[in-house]
Amino acid sequence: MLEIKFFGRGGQGVVLASQILAKAFFKMGFYPQCFSLFGGERRGAPVESFLRVDRERVKLRCGIRNPHHLIIMSLDLISPELLSGVKEGGLVLLNADSLPELLEDYKESLILALIDAQKISEQIGLGWVINTAILGAYCKINGDLELGFLEEAVKETISYKLEENLKALRLAYERVRLYPRKGHVCA
Image 1 (cartoon, rainbow, N blue to C red):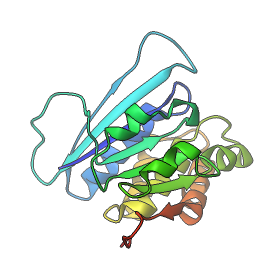
Image 2: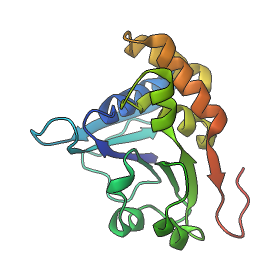
Image 3: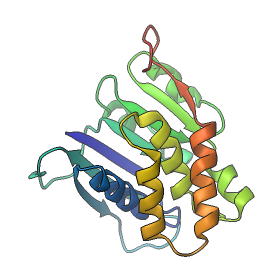
Image 4: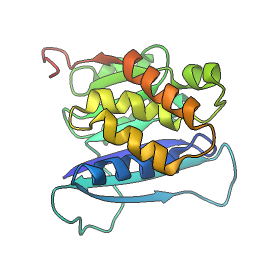
């Protein structure tokens, strides 16, 4: 079972990103389980979303404390506590243009990836909503997720600025930067 945790801020599309990704995995024949946690605050408040994916039905009904993959959509939310929960050899995808100093300590234990999803989204006209850009980057580094299924899921889920969202997804897919664990080769 693959466990993925999204962490970002309200208004960035955190919840919708996890739902789109769940739909893409479902189209590939997986069983997804997707749920979110957020308070009554509005735009800008921290939001968590969780996704489990397996070849068999997912029966767990609890939050994900130690994900295989962590997608951080807002750089200011990164913390040692958050990073230390990622499983050894796991993947951290960060919405950033350069590797934060805090992540230097995790180069040996985690696979790190960066995408400036904010810049891509702003250039295309999506503003603060970065969900499709972050998903494009995730698709490239995941290895199991097929871009065509992700594009289908986006088309079925998003109607507003669809072409812009698809462009953001594709640009991020092309531009994501991967930092393999020290001493390891990424497949």
